[in-house]
Image (cartoon, chains in turn cyan, purple):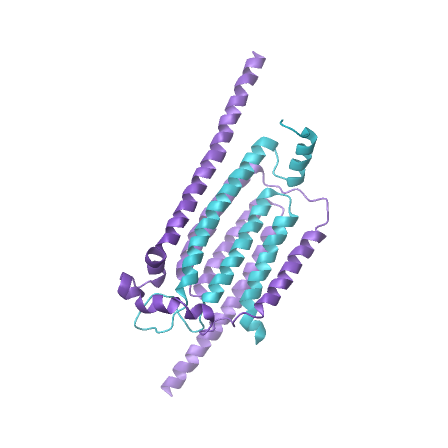
Length: 122
Length: 203
């Protein structure tokens, strides 16, 4: 029974570690951003899970229902989804800029090009 | 007996909700792994769109219908478009890394282990007497409609009780928009500047 009561938390943790792995292990900047958005949705899942009440319904008041899920996490995550998309847009713009300057979005190739150019202003 | 039947139906609905929740989470995890695994970034972006749509279904199961709307529109829609635009400009193939990813794997597994240990102290899924359910949420549910006139409590909290949060959100979006414009605008300007002397050299 313990598995069922904590399954959602563990799924959120699994998604977060998949995202963390992509951010750390993958060298492609676009893939890193995909990992970052996986990590963000893991946090969203954690919050919405905390707000769920068994047998409750969506928090839209109606005389037919008396038990509602917690509306506060929904509000916070609504804001967070929109913020996550705007940060993703900035990240992608940076990746496009790096592609224009370096001709690649692979992290190791960018570092190789930087060390080949040598220290000091280019 | 009628009350008994209703009780049974309610319990059946709860069981279906729980199983739907678990099945959707398994699908979400599978598409998440696929999005990271695939080397073709175009396919990866498509799988990420499916992931977002599955997440939107999961939000409906977890009673967060407003979040589901936003996820379907913004997560599955806008994010996919942004990803496709960026991939069109940066190339769709991801190069294979030369080093074996053991260290990142160990780091993320260790983090996951610590977090799982932390969840053992969390309240059970869906419990109505969890601390999160006892603070301000009952106030919003009880007085929200009388004080704001909106039956959707999420809307009344978003626009009224926590209106400053939404103001902050708009500020972030505005800043991000300006950031993207400055980043991509300055890049095209620099390219034009560097193109002019090159033309002069060849002449």
